[in-house]
Length: 222
Ligand SMILES: *Cc1c(COP(=O)(O)O)cnc(C)c1O
Image (cartoon, rainbow, N blue to C red; front, side, top):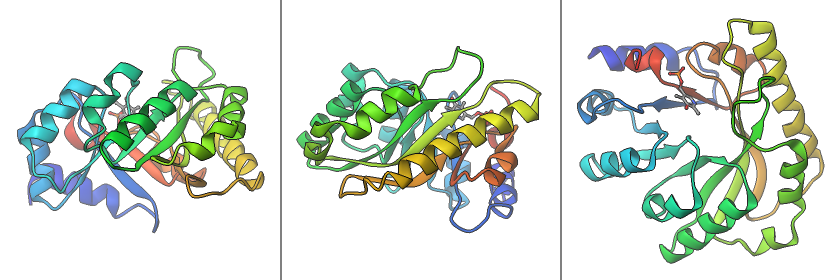
């Protein structure tokens, strides 16, 4: 078994049933991703549209590609033909554009709404207020080519694990609150919480994560 696959198996062995691993492969070459692929792994997360498209072109077609980085509306068209899930939906405008491009490709694209949970204010994501605006928008029902499956959040980059835990708890609370609104429909449900990275994914799972996005702990530092 290759080294990358060993790391993946090590992490997967610790994931509770129902928690998915997204291997974050940004800035790593195709050859490195192929080691994970050859070990049977199929779910990769990328941050940059151009890099993601290039890897899609150059790798086998049974891979699930997750867009986890900030996404500009004018670039959605490049990934709409193949992307499996977009974790970083941070505006209604972006959601509408994803719907439009998905429709052009005769697809339904799974999305997560990214919420700002970091106590530092450098990270992207919506406020709870903006999130509720999207959820309550009348137009949401008409977006038949997107499917909102849950929320995504990024914690502050800090060694203070109490702070990180507090931020994860805040996302879980928002998730539970939204879920209890009972808005479930064909294109809206609260099933997934994407939170946790290399330094804090075990903690994220304790706080309710269903998808961990792990990069450097698998592929090494960037
Ligand atoms: C880079 C990145 C990750 C992975 O970070 P690691 O610390 O390398 O595990 C996860 N999520 C997002 C949004 C990222 O940009």
